[in-house]
Length: 125
Image 1 (cartoon, rainbow, N blue to C red):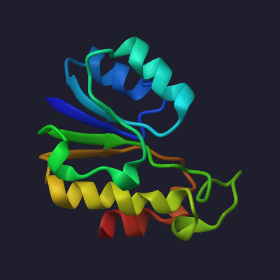
Image 2: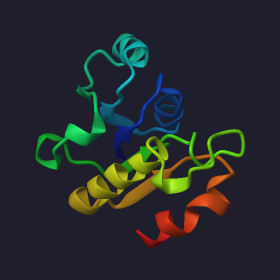
Image 3: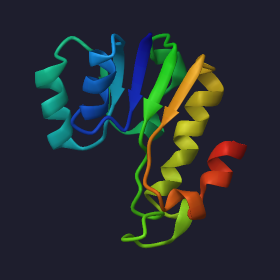
């Protein structure tokens, strides 16, 4: 499958998907250090920074939209602000791209705290 990776980090999820036979067609990651690692590992894959500025029309087609939106606000070790927190609230951007791109599959990764602090919203969206 053609995979569009959101909140890519240093690409460990992307690497696993590649090992499973999938192709990474684009990556979205805001952290400068992570962007440098992604550039080293996937120099020919297009990359975007801040997910809030990404327009669906500029992204390549994908079969799978995959990513782990920030967990700090839903983690048991985090702020416990829930899905309305500044970081975990970025789920809204993930949802926006799901709605606009309509991929065949979506893979969402997060911490177990999401079960009590937001899974209902994720599934409902």
